[in-house]
Image (cartoon, rainbow, N blue to C red; front, top):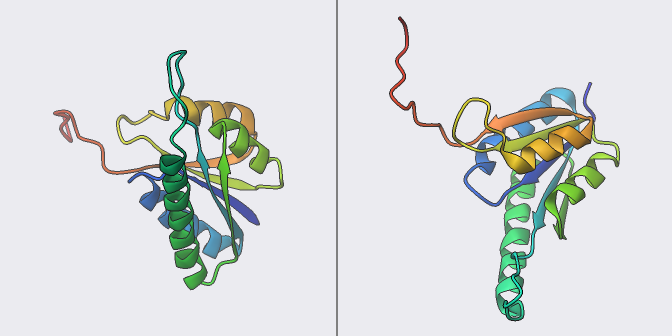
Length: 149
């Protein structure tokens, strides 16, 4: 069964459902949870000025506070939790963490379309070689679909 779960957060509304699923899976399996968030620097063009260090610091603080809230919620449920807030390329940090002994990754995905995973999720799935639970965030619109014939 699963002993070490990885929960990479996006810092968006997609995270809440993934946190619920990770908590349930960890409780059922008796697993610990590693919650992580990776801050990717803004894309920079040739005419870009310097990175605003105050804005970057504020993003880092907000990410760490979000991680702490999720960790507290999971610990309150009786789980052992570790957190990481990293900076750099999201895919690389997630893959590195997977290779540290993760048995299950709970990955939040985009909210539109049944099979939509997104470019980042696709890269992570392709390169991680670990069992992954894809959790769609907010309910997708039905785009006029009907149940039944």
